[in-house]
Length: 80
Image (cartoon, rainbow, N blue to C red; front, side, top):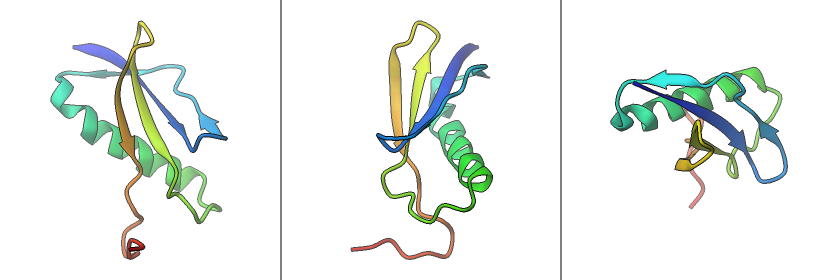
């Protein structure tokens, strides 16, 4: 099991993960990133535009291992 940090950003604003999370398998990083995105979206519910937000996943050495875009909110159509 390895520990990763799941930072969220839109390029201007950041939500940093100072604690990190243990993840059993790297295949689960995408699922965890989606959960983090959902949690951030709920905690900052006053925002309406999440189009530019990403979860940037880093190992404890600081190496970026994944960038996962926020998914559109449930029930909202994605702009074409």
